[in-house]
Image 1: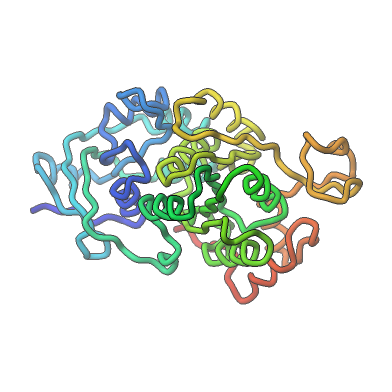
Image 2 (image 1 turned 30 degrees about the vertical axis):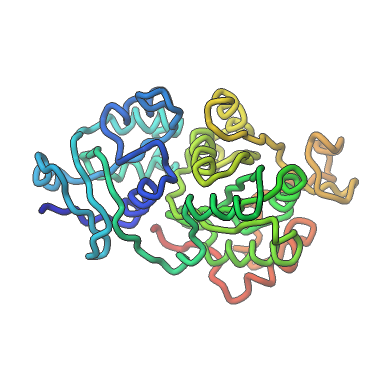
Length: 357
């Protein structure tokens, strides 16, 4: 039987499809699905799905597996699944990038990765038969496990929270809003492929462990990772993240300022506008929250909805980008921006990704 050796990104896509995190997908996208998603953010069935999920192969591999009813999928020389390839296709990479990312500029990390994919996309149904393990796999929960946990806790309303950063005070503000609103909170940092300069998974988990363990009601918070690639697709990725958290059993999902953004490619609240287009269709309620900041006059973390000083020198924006810049420079952020206890938890831990994954 023919086989394909998957790289890490490809394996993680297989895993998330097989575990149901990417429902309603049953495999890597076929051409009809791919073109529909790129053009309309919907599958041919009409279900909302904003981002392509593809298996890329070179021409030699495509020729070798063409006509196979079922092939073996391996990762690091271990069988992890099967694949029934029934769709082989290519696309206009630049046009697709513009549709999905809003640009075809290779300086955009999501675009750069997409343009680097192998020439042929292959679609078809997949099955997951074994799971690989990674350094941080102990923190990974499946959709079945999270749903079981929520039911056991008796939580009827669960807010999902997406992050790729060590928690700062603005994150903490959003988490507290969620806890005021819902029975439970599922904090699920994304720890798959990310760009150089983003936080390491170890730093993110240490930071959230300190925050949840010391300052939040831990019995109402579940912490677990999402091992999938960061696409940096801004508004489209916000919809994607909402769909994933629905599949993990969440009833609500927070979309804040510049969700899944990078650089200045997207507007501050573009993700709010796009998610609003799909209200009532996602199977999860999106909580569109304004970006918190520290106000020296109010002496607290506030938002533009609760403070009148946002356009004065008293307002200090808090962003993951700013915190990374401070920490990269070897400085310690103001405790009004990031808790000292979170910073202390990061000692002796590599903070930033230094090579492309």
